Length: 392
Image (cartoon, rainbow, N blue to C red; front, side, top):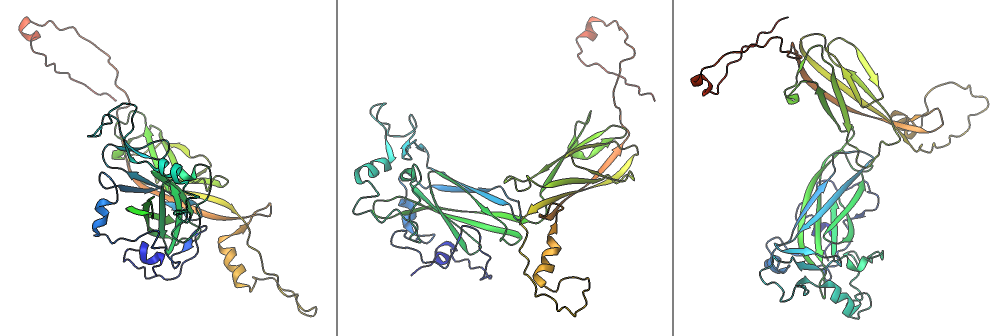
């Protein structure tokens, strides 16, 4: 029998054999129902006929990079052959005025897959031939939330030796917590099946890389009045520059955190610590400077239980010192007590860039205008020479 690892790894076996469990995921050592979910090799000719009208492709995206402990979200979208689209019932139909064989009447709909008819005729859930089809490859039944019968695709995601199953329509979205995912760059693979009369049919695969980091992902934009090209990192002396910091936190993991911004502009002005994501600075010297920014987040987390120690003998002298419990000492390194009795951890993000500060013309004023008499022949020449003299 085949296991999920055999089906989803596609011949790529990881050298790591043990993983921390991702919340809500299952081990890929579980058995795969090959009868209900047939497995095809990449060059199997059946791929050419698995979908009416052409091949379906899948696009997999994520909102990575993700700070460890936050959620990373994946979105997979099916891209159907030309002229095909999904209707409100989840059926696949031909777009009007697009298909080569349009319906005879404008009220008639030409179906690619009329799954609604399958469900209505058979009941899908109660049909004697299909009563066992509403289940995932590992045998777990489909969740019966509203509209579940109209979800005609099964998505199986695989990463880190574990898998996640869900049903959906032409797109599916899900999030995974990264607390137990190793730092670094990883690969997420998704395999998609469509509903069939007697079994599910594989139609597409997709993969995407995602990053889990312990550094807060940050992006900094700079703005200076009269600067037409911010991207060249050249700024004008004695004119304020506005710095705006964006933290990439799509799952709002840092919402309840205390965040500070530590600026060092590299011009000898010192270290500035602010709580706002926007600040401004004016360089009063010319030259090349290196900007350094550290963003620090103090994140509240549940406190780990401390294993009670045996009471000391009454005759023993009580001395101050660190606990000998190794688990507790490890926790102290990454977790500290808050004044209110809670615990928190620190996460930092870093940004560094080189800047050039030069003398600049802040504004130009017209101080004198002269009328010049022109001949008719000179008027035909549209070119005019201007002489600009700078003073100061």
